[in-house]
Image (cartoon, rainbow, N blue to C red; front, side):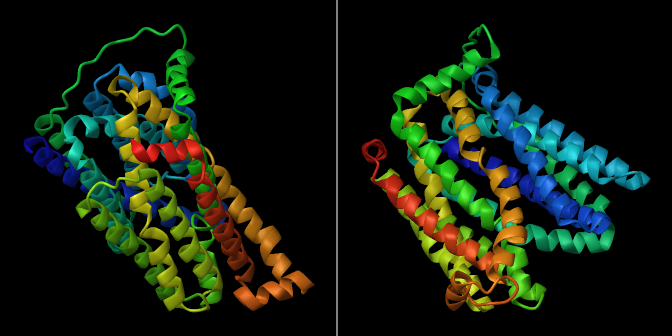
Length: 425
């Protein structure tokens, strides 16, 4: 119980630091769009973050397993903070440009590739086994609370003091979290350094484990597919679709985004107080199916802010259950001495589809679906009866497609025998 209380202190400090990082990310989007007036430049920011993260994730597992998790977390966070410091200096001296931000995002992506598996392994060492479900719910709660409040706080601070004020808050929150981790948190671990003949030798340990644990590998692959479907729409398409269909009503967009965060908060609270599920794999895919069914499909057919808000709530509320189910399976099935390698491979597999979904989603909206819905063909006219007509209807059809595909993929995954076996772990 003492370790769990210390984890709560760590969780609070890390959450405040994540709030600062999220505010910085949002402020950089505002600054970049102001300077370039280009939506593509914003997509490139996300792309520069995800691609290095995915590529590096493949190699960091053995490094994390063979080194102090606390040291990895401290160094990774420090390098990310140093990147923010450089952006602050460039901003205050008036030489900041978009390509500086692209480089910073790439650095943050690399440090995150080290920090996330180290943090995942550290949680299992700090928190009692019977509290892992609660911890997953707490993390979902805090991350979604950040989703709700960081854009609002960043907008206020951005209007008051510009980008430098937000970067200063980010650095101060980092310093507080750094001190808590350094001085108050002890991560019990016995490090056995292994020698590998090549950088790929450590990776192969993770892949060999997954070769024998086919159910876990199938979860990772199916999650990669579901991530692709979700990023086709929610990452790039949601905001422009609502703006197009609401006569550029920023208030409506703000309400929908807030409801998405609130759904995640409610889901995180429910996960944190519920008992551990006996059917973890079933929980993962039923939650995913419900998210696509009630989220994407209602978002597609909705014509007003009430429907879009309900869809946003329905899409995000099941997400904490997906994360909790997956984490519980991984913690119980993966030996502690190779958890870093398997978590790193997991991150590389599951998130590999995200940058492609981000880029493809924008292209399909602008050059395929929106022109198609203005073509007055028989299929387009039939689809108008479902999603409506006019600007934004093509993007609504994209939500229709991802809803059907995501729901079908979730049910198909649930029926896989190897995945079903994980219900008994």
